[in-house]
Structures are given as structure tokens and as C-alpha cells.
Length: 569
Image (tube, rainbow, N blue to C red):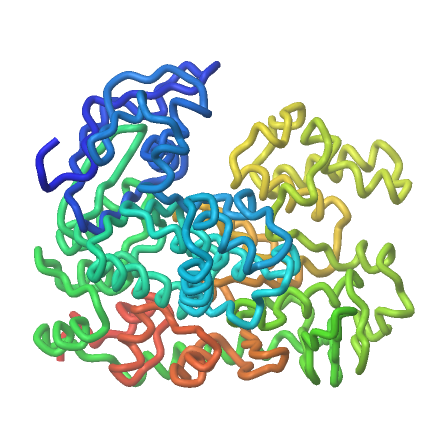
């Protein structure tokens, strides 16, 4: 290990106990002090396994066969215990909820420093500082289980930052965060890295968040297939797509219309490149695009869900919804977006009776939900939770999907038919006798969707359907949801992934502090960048570029199709 390196990995191999394939296969990597390194790759590539090698969880807690060496600040992880490494190496896990256990937010942040013998005065300073960093100052006395998913993720980050580790390892640290919070977390960490000379190693799927990093390492099948400066890696659109990593929309667009080795990455660079390439947008083609969209929207005119002055106050006094007025029509594909804790999930749970209003009115098929009850509503409005593990419980996929029809006394022959249709819709035919928990996160998500489809609901609600999935899995999931919508299912999804909204939603509701801030077509909503920022949201970089050019395009292919003939004036 040279003087400037804090981590040296040499010929690292690891195979989990009972597995035949290597999860890591010959990783050699040097990480200098103060570097911001991003590790990217598809699911099951070995990213999380590599992260857990850095603080000794592998080999001391996760058993298997380990070859090679991991040297962290001069300590070989084989010979150092996890507690010995914990003071120097902090880790935020992909399953961040698993590392929260205290009775309130403040105690959670205090736990690490307290165990390292930090003085009470210093501990208080760290608690205050880190809760402020992540925007949880007002929640210090709340039990963690009462927080939203995004707020729990912020708490996990604050609790690790409070330990002030020399090396900070973060495994998909912002999956549940709204776009501005996501950007804020990376800005905070980058600032801390620069001021304290900390080393930052992040496993991440979102390519827009990597622009401030020093280097990207791409992993496939447990091997490093590419490593280089951020710009170099992100400009290689084809390689990213081949490896299951989402390319940025701006270089993807320019790679298709004006290929070069120096593709723009940011909206500002994109505007300059657009001008230099002499590209022009056809007003006629753009008007035709918008008109076609408006004609499609006009076909959806039968209300299926109607909220009038809807309010919901929780028993603890939190006023989560304040005067919501909305209408969702039969057959629409709707996105509900907003910052963490804005009331999105609270609103969606009213659609199928999981929650009842404390004020105002909500109707499904023109009947108040309070007159229908959760059992009846559950047949009409299916709900897929953010974490599929919260609703899966059967030993076999078939039984999981068959549960609700059987509960409703559907004849067994029809149950088999419904299960077969649902599994075909989600691409899981042949998995009937598999244990759902043996599947990947994407697989379990599909089982949860199939279980809801078997009820044959009129409306399908998905809460964060792409969280924890890699780019290919996200696109596969949303393509499946789109197919279901095209077959006639009214579809409502909650997400923090703005590219998913841009590419799949027809209508968008933006929620802020329990109220509707914006509503309209996706194109309309994404044209209001300043208003979106008030709700901690921002359109994808590509949409920001399009707005700066005077037209709101949602995808690179839309803009390409609206260029003047040949792409030039």
C-alpha cells in the first residue's frame, strides 16, 4: 500500500457459502485518499459484495470462500474485526431500514459516536449538525418507524456521517430520495470529502448523480470491466447500455444525431453543442407531437377516482393531506410525485381504503370509499407496496398469486386460470413452484404485481415500483406496467425517478406539504422547473436541456423526431 492509498484490493475473489459462482472474481483496485469513487453495474454484478468487503463484514459475518486481500488504512480485513474497522469505515447499506433500531431519531444518530466514547458536548454538536445536513431537525424526537422511506434513508446517512469515518461507503444511498434531496446529499458528502479529506465510495445506479465524482468503476459478473474519469465513462453511451447502466439522456441524444468522442453531459453543455452543430427544431413537428398527445388524453373522460377537499390527519396530529382535489380517469397512466414526506403514499392509500379520510370526500366509481370498505375496494383497486417483502408471505409463487382469489372464494379452476394469466403478464411463467424470497428484488416485485393482477382490479397502484432495481430492470418493470395500462388497466405510480415519469406517465400530480402544487400532462408539469424545485423535484437533465431550447421534449427520441430534415437548418 503506497502512502497516498487508503484502500488496496488485490486479486479479490469471494464466493458465498453454498453458491457455485464467484460473486467477485479477480478484483484489483487502488483507491487514493480523498477520492470520490463510484461503482456501477447491473444487479448481481457484485457491487454490494465489494462494499461489504471494505468494512470486514466479508469475511467475518457473511461466510464463504475468500481469496486475495483487502487492505484498508494499513489493516488487512482478514485480520481486523468489524468493530476495529468501524471507526474508520462507515457504511450506509442498500437495505438502510435494517440498520435503524433506536427508539427515536436523535438516539439513532447518537449511537455510533456514543460507542466510540465521544464526549456529550461533541456528540450533541454532531447530532445537530448531521440532522441539519439531511433536513431532519424537526423529527429528532420521532420514532424511526414513523418516518417515510426517504426520511429513513436520510436518517441512516446522518447516523453514519456522525461517526466521522475516514472512509465512507454508501450502497445506493439515495434510492428513496426526491431529486433535490438526492443532489443535496451528494453535495454535502462532496463538501465534507473536500474539507476533511475523506474518501467516498458510492454504489449508484443514477448516472446524473455521478457527475461530481473523480472516477467510475464499471463491474460485470464480479469483474472490473472498465475504470476511468467520470467524463470518459459517461460519454461511452454504448458501453453503459451494454452493462445495464443508464446512460445520460443528453449524450445519448447527441450520440444519435451528431456522434463524437466529446459528447456534452450537462444541460449547459448541451445547449452549446446544439448551437455548434447547427441543429434546429421544427415548430410544425413539435405542434403535431403536442396535438397527438392532447387527442390521446381526450379519450380518457370517465372518472374512476375523485377526491374533493380530501384531508387526512394521523392520530399523532400530523396533517398529511390538506384539501386535495383531483380526478383520475379510466385508462390513464398517472404519476404522483413530490418530496419525501409530502403525502404521496398517504394519498394513494386512500384510493383503496387502506386509509379513510378525516375530512372531505373520496369516491371510487362514484361511491364513497367509506361505503365500500377495504375488502370490496381491494378487488377494484390493487396496491403494490414500495417493498414487495412487506406483502409476500407464501412459500410458493403460485400460492402467493392465488391467495386473494381464493380468499374471495373464486372457484379453483378459475384461480389457476387467473394465476396463469397474471404470471404471463409479469413474465414469470415457469416460476410457479419457486420460493418468492429466492428471487431477485425485481422478481419479488413482479410476484407482488402478479398477486394484485390476479384479483383483476380496475385500478393498479404501484408505490415506488423501480426502487432498488438496475436500469434494465427498471425499464423492464415499467414496460410491463405500460402493457397492462394499454390493456385497459388504470395505472397510478409513485416514484422519485423523474426519467420514469418523463417516459411513462400521461398525467402528473405534484404533491407538496399535503397539497397539490401542480397537475397536468407530463409535458406541462415538466415545463415548470422553478415550481418543481419548490417541491424538491427537477426534470431529468435531458428535459432541462429541451426547456432551455424552448420546447419541452420528454425523451431524446422525441427531440430527434422533431429536428428539421437531416437535423440541420
